[in-house]
Length: 120
Image 1 (cartoon, rainbow, N blue to C red):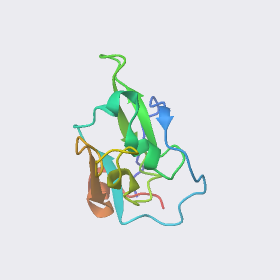
Image 2: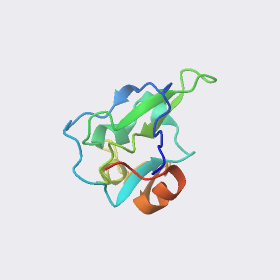
Image 3: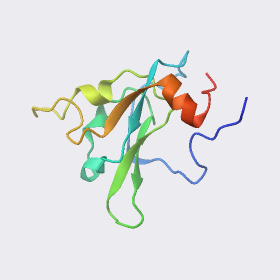
């Protein structure tokens, strides 16, 4: 099996980061959340990160060319495929998921075909 790097070593997970459970997942999920090119980072207050139940799974990456802007990323080794990041909007809002449609739920087989097999 080929060795795959899921996060480049230079990636630093910045706040806001998801908070929640820290226990390792027990199996590979059937789907993974993948952030697409439509992500705006919601000006540093993304609702998706708030609803993710896994510690450090979703995190902000600053855009070095356009500070203070950035985007959200998902750690594929931590994502459990629960879809909570896509199912709610900020409290009091009438949103159903990301207002920019920036989160795709991708079957693990499709993800692995591009990036390699997940280790667990």
